[in-house]
Image 1 (cartoon, helix red, strand yellow):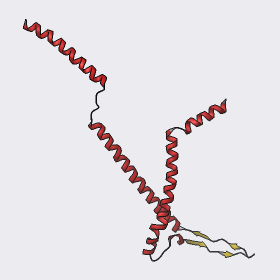
Image 2: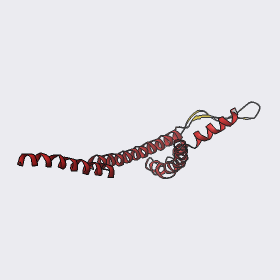
Image 3: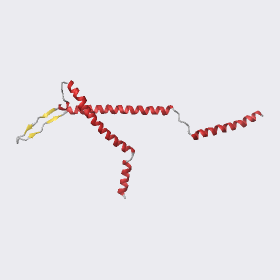
Image 4: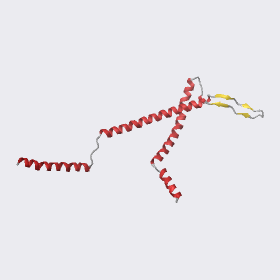
Length: 153
């Protein structure tokens, strides 16, 4: 019985709208990351590298220890800091951050317009409210008419 309730609880959790929206956002974000990475690596960085004298940013690195051969004849791996890849990652981050900023700005503008529209247009009365208003007005007229007849006599 414990497993069944646990599975039912998990199903309830997984089928809530927020969880599904989050999953869709993560999937779209991953795809967007691939697009931005390609944009930076294949479109933005090559012209910047060309302007800087034909530099390929993926080749930029600081070699701490070069490749070598050990005494037994095996190769010893070199150690390098690949700051060119880091620069590409920074450009990718800046593009994603700017895109998210624009998206949030757009959403805020749309929600602000909706709030202004709600504030500008007073809510329309319901049919019940209209009926109650009519009844109130009729009752006011009935109470005024006898008072006016007494004044005349």
